[in-house]
Image 1 (cartoon, chains in turn orange, green):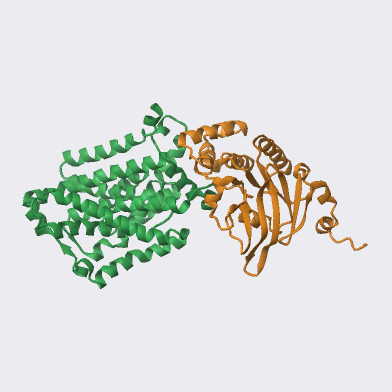
Image 2: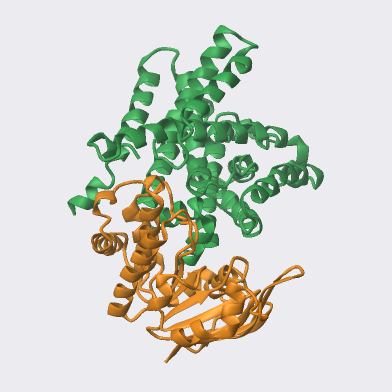
Length: 246
Length: 333
C-alpha cells in the first residue's frame, strides 16, 4: 500500500531549483534510503514532506489524501515524524519532557494527557537506553544522546512515516549505523516506514534499505531496489566521476 | 491524587513571599508605600512573564495593554457614575471592562504580529504602543489628549473616605491579588499542555511545528492571558490609585522596558523569577533614589549588566538549575 506519494514536486529558492520535478512513492513499512551529495536537495525534500516549505509545483499525498499545502502541525499527527540533521532538542526541557511533547501533540485522535504522555516517554526512554539521562536538560546531552532523544521524540508521535535526517552532524558513522539499525528494528515491530537520508552510498544504512532513491542537483536520478541502484551506471558516474574511458 | 497536589507546591514560596510583603507593609510604619511599589513591579513582571518568559517573544508594546486597562476602569467609573445603587460594584465593572479591552487589543495585535518571528515581532510591536496613543489623541477618542479625570465621580459613589482608602490601600491589595493570580495561571500553564507547547516553541519553533504543535495558537493564548493581566494591573495600580488617565502617561514605553528588565533579572519563564526580579528592581530603584538621588540610573545600569552577565538565566533560572533533582527543586520552578 502506498503511504506517501510525491507527484512532480518542484521547489525553487529564487533562481535555484532545489527540488526539480521529483515523483516518488513510499510503501507502508518500507525502509528507503535517500542518497545524494551535499546540495542535492535531500533536506529540502524532507522539508516539503514535513511541511516546513510548500512546493511551487506538484502534489504530495499521504495515505491518499492531498497534504500539499497542509501546515506542518497538522501533518505531524497524521503520522509524519522526523529528526533533524543537527539535533534540535528543546534544550531547557528534560529528556523526558522532550519525548513527552511528541506524544502530547504529535499523535492522532484523542490527545494524550500530560501524565499519559510522560508514561509513553518513560517507556521509550527505557527502550532507547536513556534512563540515566531522563531528568537531564536536553541541552546538556552529547550529540549522540541528542540524536537518540530525537528519535524517541519522533517515535512518541506514533508515526507511520519516519524521516531520518542522519547526515553527519558530529557523529561517528558507525554510531549512526547502529542507531539506524536499532530504529529499523522498532520500525519493523510497529510497521513504520523509514526514509533515511544518507550522504554516501557505501554506508551500511544502504545495505539495510529495501529501496534507494538517488538525488542529483534536485532531480531524481535513480529509484530502484537497492542492489539494482548500486550497479546503475548513472550512480557510479555521480559518485565516482565520469567514466569517459580514462 | 497526591501527584496533583505536589504539582502545585511551587505556589507555596510565591504565596509566602506575597504574604510577607503584605505583613511588612501593614505592620511596619512607612513601609506601605514601598510595598505598594514592589507589588506593582512584581505583578507587572508576573503578568509579562506569561508572554515574554514563556514564549521568548519580546513585546515592546506591552504597556499599551496596561494603558487600555486603565482606560477601561476610567471609562466605567466616569460614564456609569450617574447610575444609582452601583456602589463598589462599579469597580467590578471597571475590572471587567479593563480585561475586555486589553483582551480585544491583544487579539487585534496578536492576530497580525504573532505571525512574525523573533525580532520582526519585536519591531512590529514598538509601533503598536505609539500608534494607539496617537490614535486616542488624534481621533479624540475618550477625550483625546485631555484624558479622563474621575476623582469627583469616585468620591460621589464611594464617599470621600472610602475613595481615599481605595487609593491608599485597596488598589494595592488588588495588585497583590492580581500578582498571585498571574503566578497561579503561570503554574497551571506550566503543568498543562500549554506550558509544554510554549517551552517547545520558545526553544525551537520549527521543531515544535513538525511535532504537531500549532505554534500560532499557543502564542496567542499566552499573549492574550498576559495582556489581560496587564489590563488588570493598569486598572488597579494606575486608575484606582490616581483617579485620572492621560495618554502620554499610560502609553509610556519606559514601563515596558522595566517589565523586560524584571523578567530577565529574575529568570524568564520561571514562576518565581518575576517576583525575585520585581523585588530586586523595586528595592534597588527605591533606595538608590533616596541615597544618591539623580544618580540612581548611573549606578543601576551597571548593576543590571552585572546580574545579567553573571546569571544569564536570571537569578531564579540559576537557582533552578542548581536545585534540579533535589528536595528544594520541587519548590523552585
